[in-house]
Image (cartoon, rainbow, N blue to C red; front, side):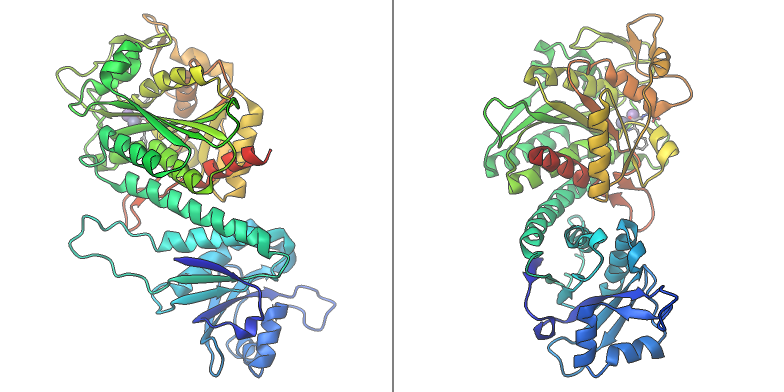
Length: 504
Ligand code: BES
Ligand code: MN
Ligand code: ZN
């Protein structure tokens, strides 16, 4: 897909379809109260087309409600269609309205033969900032065009849409240009994360993730990679990590991907991803129904690789170190058993009460490994708990951490990037749930607050630096149904968070 900017007269646009906003006039004192109104660009086009837009709005009672859109065909112009996209009351339009408007636009162009699209929303209210529009539109439309058909004999037909042009004013052009670069890097990152999440467990193994990290490092400026195998993890005394990987014939890997875009000695920001390429539960075996979906238990790792893919393209002035803790969680004669006690590389001993709480076991050793980088911040990303889906469903990722400013930066980044998260408390009151009668801690809490007790477990290993944890069990994947598959979240949040760090 090609994304370009256009600042010349809208009337001269050569395009299969021009999208224009439609508002409702709510000013009761005006004689046009409750009527649908075009923006100034829309009015220009209306005049040039012998008022066909205003006539159509009236005779077809076209709605300006956010979430509604109406397609009209046009004769005798350099564009053949106009799509009127509802925004409701201009003064009340916010990011939710924008999301609805873009969703409606997306639905209308789906399954059409439109090859080039011109989005002429430069007149939308300042509150919606033209730049936000660009990122949301590109991400939504590209999301709609994503296909995962590499294992299908019959491939999905290619979409005819190949060009999106954004009509902007001269002063909006420079910032819009930057947003196009950001959005297309973000789309690459999301698609990388989706592909990795959708790949089956027999293809996407820890070794496969290591190869992908290696490739990214080979192909990108300022990248280097280190891949630690089980023997090396043994010498590092990573008993918690190894207690998970040992039950599988697929060897576990700790993958370290470094990006140096900042000053030599500047402390890095770190991302740590859970990369369980299949979670059977181990000896605490999961039920059979939907067990196939546990191939997505590496979506934390996928979001890290996706974000780093976008970083490779944008080359921000920052140092970033990513760690992927990757293993397969399987039942086997030599697998860990409930009641086993292992020693993590930090020295903390752990009683494994449930082998299905394996994510925290691989992550804790990775988080201890992070200490040597003296990081400015560490964010781990994990499909850690089913309890997170109970608490927040599928719209919102959970954030917890030991540093409120860091947590707030992640919450803000999520809002900015339309990839929302919400904080759960990890107050000390919860910590006693992971006390063990036999070891320093155990790997599960009691009945309630499963996402919080999982974060409490991680917090025992992250005392040396500002740390936050994102539980993406609900947001990284759509279960069952026709949209089943990886979402690419939280790549937008992570990318925005890192770019905000560059700007600060
Ligand atoms: N990978 C799962 C969490 C998960 C569940 C992610 C469903 C996505 C959808 C994790 O390893 C796990 O099994 N957690 C257990 C923890 C429990 C044993 C304390 C869970 O959530 O049931
Ligand atoms: Mn598990
Ligand atoms: Zn898991």
